[in-house]
Length: 272
Image 1 (tube, helix red, strand yellow):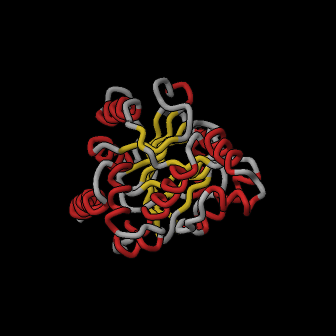
Image 2 (cartoon, helix red, strand yellow; image 1 turned 90 degrees about the horizontal axis):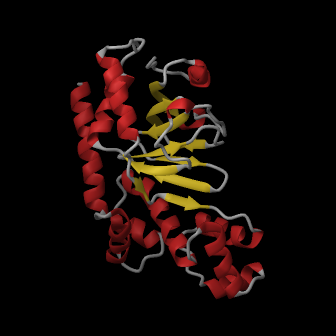
């Protein structure tokens, strides 16, 4: 089935029989399900909104032209602000071969985006040998080749490094150095450096850069100026922020969100 789902129907998805279920639903930010899990793997995708998916040790922020793959039985929480139009693809556990076994951000190709929109618009049962079944099979093939993108932020466990990370999430512009953080949390510079690498897989400065990038995405998607966002996040100049953004995302912020805007305008024109 490809239902337009409510919160109640979302909880019932695990009981549906088809290998693939594509859904489309509109949430108010306050109505999004709190920490929950599915027996199916799930692709979370919005063509219009920035969405944050949080698991125990990973935070992933995705703008409109990216998605999040969540494996089966992984507790997660989805967050956003305002009204959130979201599509999801749920895959039965026996059809997960070739799909990631961890929670990752992925690039959504134009082809996959159109296939998801087409399938989510149908409420008919998928029958063997029909066009709907063939679309579902192509979606499965596309899911297996999704490029992973660097939009996740690993979270640590050690209380000292957690204190540093929590402070930086609250204020990404904080410029304190690792020795200064060490004095604040009662650990040596060498210990904090080792903890960052061991528990997040990233050096301190890379983790802070990633935290700043993920803090920037919702604001840029809302149309805030690059200059305001860059200065608020601790960059001395907008060009320094743009350079960082391009090094991670492959394009400048302007080009990145212009591409997302074209996709949204295309979807709205087709809906009209």
